[in-house]
Amino acid sequence: MRSLTAVALTTPFAMLLAGCAVGPTYLAPTAPTLGVPAAWSVPATASREDLAAWWRRFDDPVLSALIDKAMALNLDIAQAQARLRQAREALVQSRSGLFPTLSASGSGGRNEALAGTLAPTGSGATSLSLGLDASYQADVFGGVRRSVEASSADLAASGFTLAATQLSMESELARNYMQARGFQQQLDLARATLAIQDDNLSIAQFRVQAGLVTSVDVESARASRAQAAAVIPQVEQSFAAAVARIAVLTGEAPGALRPLLATPAPIPTGPANIALGIPADLLRRRPDVLSAERNLAAASARIGVAQARLYPALSFTGSLASSAGAVRTLFDTITGSLFANLAQTLFDGGSRRAQTRSARAGADLAFAAYKSSVLRAIEDTENAAGALDSAEAREVQFALAATAAQNSAILARSQYRAGLTDFTTLNTQESALVNARTSLLQARADKAQALVTLFVALGGGWSGADLAPAAAATPSSSPR
Image 1 (cartoon, rainbow, N blue to C red):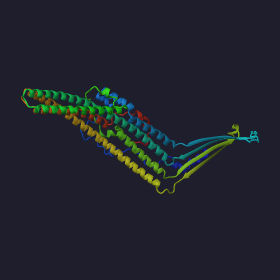
Image 2 (tube, rainbow, N blue to C red; image 1 turned 60 degrees about the horizontal axis):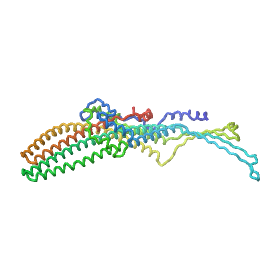
Image 3 (cartoon, helix red, strand yellow; image 1 turned 90 degrees about the vertical axis):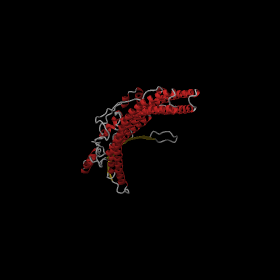
Image 4 (cartoon, rainbow, N blue to C red; image 1 turned 30 degrees about the vertical axis):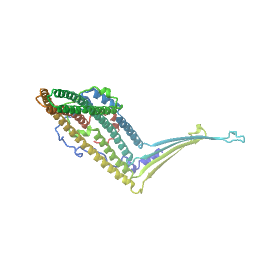
């Protein structure tokens, strides 16, 4: 068997094809090919930001504890982890095609002659047999190797998809947390506004009883109070929805976290500045971009898999067998056989060539998806940076507006008590104060959420611990 195998594999034809792998050799597209600009179109610092555990930079222990909990219990992450394990096993299956298949069999029996009384006569015979079969399809055109390359890229893509899922979860939880804290601030403001409206109603009622004004002031004050009271249940419902979403993201029932988040707290502020680096950094930092690149590598390798089917298939089969009437003589005589087979499909109606063209179309599709993910990453980053600048500018102006509106409302209240102005003027000034304070809270909430969005747009701080097996499985033909 060894001699025949050696003869088959040392023929010039086999030697020529032993290291051949049809299909394109994959090289990752360069940044200019993907349309990545050299610099951002918005003002930015070129130094790179440390994004590890970015949520801790908000200096909020509750937020950090919630994200740590969600990393361990989130169900979307659990699904992505399961898909990563599936991809690892798919790679093992692909690699199995590089090795021969072995199977063993054994049987035993005894034939016994029976007398008329159905009793054994003792003249029977025992038969034993053992067999070993082997089959191997030589990967002369590299179809199996390309399949392994594709599976390796799929595994890496699944790892990066897991990282993207983690990052998405962190982002959604942080945004809902910022919203929840913002709703608590709005709720405090709504209750304070209601208390002011109660006071205004009391003043108006006193002035009507004193004959200083008509009942129009009372009705106006009553309407303003009702409108202020109507805001409270709306904000309470929004707060409850944000808390429920946070609970589900941590793998718990919607109401599980209400006691933890019941105590009001300010909206986390986060760092003052974030360095964006350069646009090309996103090719290495965004897990969704990295996943799209690995999908492109897998699609490129599958072109080789399809092309290999156009060429002859060389396979070997061999067997060893032994049979005897007793165990002690079972290995006295062993027979073996080896066969080589070369097969080529002559006509299939164009099916295999269509598969090759389909694989090339799949690679074009993957390239377009990769380029789209890169451009979208740049768009996300610049939009988030712009939203952060806008929120910071609005926060400054609304703070000034809130201070001025508060002074004006205090003055209008004093004048109304003294009878120097009417209720309409008082109501207008206090409405302006409520609007300014609400806008200031919204600007602060927008700033916090813009910070979260920017951290995520830059790639976040996903951990590569779960991706180590995927990285180790990536072949040498990966991007260089």
